[in-house]
Image (cartoon, rainbow, N blue to C red; front, side, top):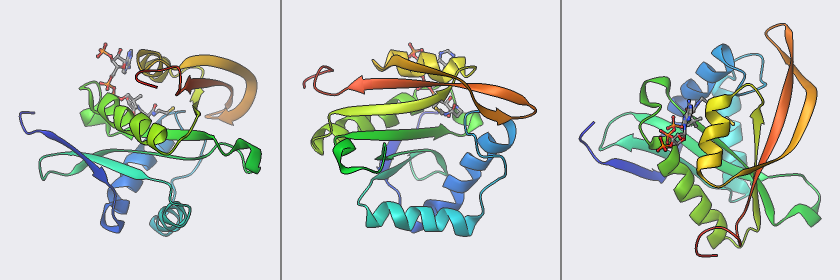
Length: 173
Ligand SMILES: CC(C)(COP(=O)(O)OP(=O)(O)OC[C@H]1O[C@@H](n2cnc3c(N)ncnc32)[C@H](O)[C@@H]1OP(=O)(O)O)[C@@H](O)C(=O)NCCC(=O)NCCS
């Protein structure tokens, strides 16, 4: 891939690509605890909700190529006392994994979270998703909770790990 990686805010036109990338993970992995692929209509509604809440969604592509990854954050929990913490999601298309795209997207996401005055980012990672746990550790996230058997998919119980980054302690603060 010699064309430069572009990371930009997502538009409505990106929702089909976002949906396709997400649904691949839904169907084939425990990265998401959704059991069925989401419909395009549901993902459009999700995107509109993000816009209403002014929560950012980014996509990544090489040059003017197809969207290969997306990331977002949103409320960690609904009550207003949680307003300085957000939960993020990041998904890279299988063909584009392991090439630094996720890291670049998360670097953007973390900078944006800081800019918004957020204090903390939380990721919910399946305990068997060693790749995502290593990925988050590389970005400075620390495992802070390990829930046993809170998920069930593909006929088995799933443990969930919360990883957290305190934004004021990381980087330039
Ligand atoms: C997890 C995911 C977001 C990582 O994105 P990526 O673009 O593949 O990762 P990057 O190439 O940016 O890797 C950055 C760092 O993370 C680590 N890493 C990423 N994938 C890894 C893997 N499978 N195993 C071990 N380490 C890994 C590496 O240490 C790498 O650092 P390095 O530069 O020192 O090699 C991506 O693989 C993905 O979307 N997976 C499927 C969905 C998913 O699990 N999403 C997260 C849900 S919590």
